[in-house]
Image 1: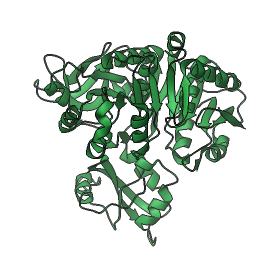
Image 2: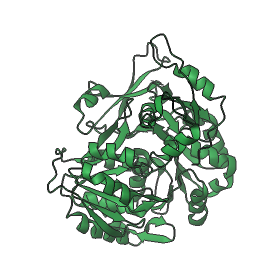
Image 3: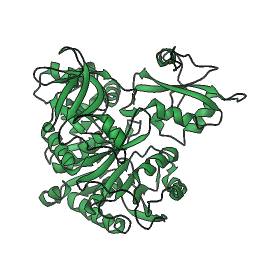
Image 4: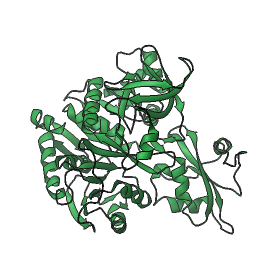
Length: 498
């Protein structure tokens, strides 16, 4: 994907980050330079964990891994030591490539602390945001003991099940190439386009959009936005972005406060959560043709709207299956009765890394079970009715309550914890936590937040925390999550600084 654009457009801009511009030829040179160093730590078929936000370092490290024939494992840069230990232990990488520091957090220190617990890691290359290699941290491994993957697997993208345990979905070269081609065609991307990439390239949505832009020979402005709109404003105003992708929460915030930014935007995708039709209607009024896209970590983009679809369909469906995908609604008793949306095709993941039982449970024959409920009309348009799994969508990020509950229970003064999702005007949804303190403990919401902030990603921090004597229970003995969510909507936020 990259090499073709290097040959066709060597002097055209490929990446912009801050004041730095890399044309396609320069990007390829940086990839080769890093691959030379990385080759001492990882070989063909081995996994390389990548820890960086949307900065040149992430793109360079990803393509350097692929030039070696290694398998890239991009990880969210908002993860902290507690989470990284779990994911890295599961991924069993031969090497790690990471930013030294990011937003005041030292990944170098965290990785040094984790090295004794990562027996397959030979070493870690520390980079700055622009991709320049600095120090190297040595690991204990001499040879990778990690199991080999099928030769066509080029990446492992992490998701979580309802248990919150990390699961790495295998991504094949054919899937990545087909997704890039389909998305570029759907948006009619050309070398003249400039994409503002706000969604994390470590996620399936962001990675697909990045590869589509590079395959088209267009320019990508890498935006490390977090929860601030300031970097988005800079990217769009200074670089004249014609393509913008994002979550419904991002577009809703821009419509409310930065409507003028859409003046030069031609198109883009909205995904990551259900997008209310009213948001798409307002986007139409603001100018750009933002298209609904449906996908998952396990399949990338699988369905999407087209610019020539009728407004009613663009606003209320996620379009029709992309090439290579087939959908069905399993279990619906009538055409308008939602069933579980299931997907099959050559671009669906072959499974989860080292998890045969989870892989088997995710499929019904050769149909992947999305866990979403929906319908499919006679023309093939897919409508998503709701989620069957307990997942909370925080500003486009999927957060599983079980994972956050498990983390809260690592605090010595927490005896029980339940986390629920509640609606939020700007974020889409946020987390609310109910905790029962250990006997005799003097636990406060503030103390729990101070414990959590440096240890887990910011978007997983509860927006409200209630310390209670006991939890309401259902007759089955399980916590009454519906009652807790209803109560959380009436409470004041905990003052989480994002």
